[in-house]
Length: 66
Image (cartoon, rainbow, N blue to C red; front, side, top):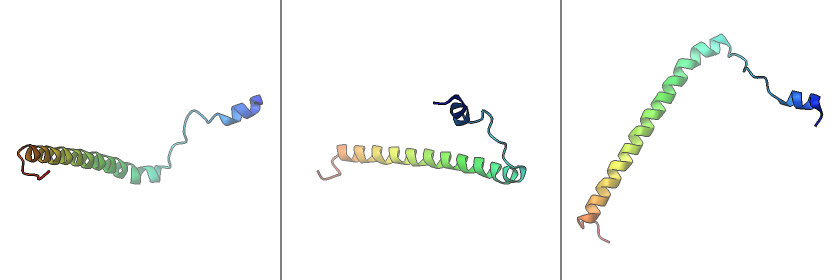
């Protein structure tokens, strides 16, 4: 590969800063969305674990017909 082409292929080390208006509007909203997503994922995983545990215990007690 030509050295100039290799240098052109390397991206700049620092990303361009976001525009201030866009940053002010969307940054808190974006972090709020991410935390909401984490809470929802945690709730869903705990719900699945509880449901699985209930299903296993009722299966062991013979409530579910095999």
